[in-house]
Image 1 (cartoon, rainbow, N blue to C red):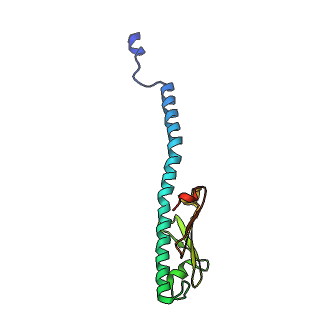
Image 2: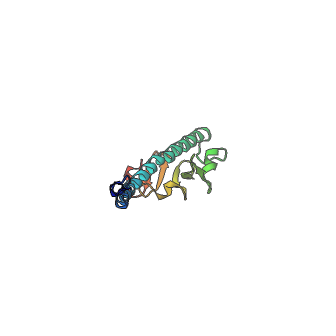
Length: 143
């Protein structure tokens, strides 16, 4: 074999591979947090939908029994006295404080779920008057 056949390289040099890996790492470091925030934002709808469902069930109880906390109301027993109702994908747990004429529903993220790291909208509240609230660093934009 002659010397000219060895001087032609058909692969990548180590420095080229390191540069590509560094670029991919930088892009991933920027994109992953943004992706996770998008996932958390879309998962918030699960808490809101479940809270609205529970609120409608409580309104039906009030219509039927003239009380939100009537013993015959299954929606009331599902969320009061320390009981919680988990959302479909277990991202949130719904609890409530009920009296005969008022209620306040609270949705808290389940520990260990992706929503547990949601600092923008940490929890949600909903009352019988339709007053919506949230806690977190962006609580004004949660609902």
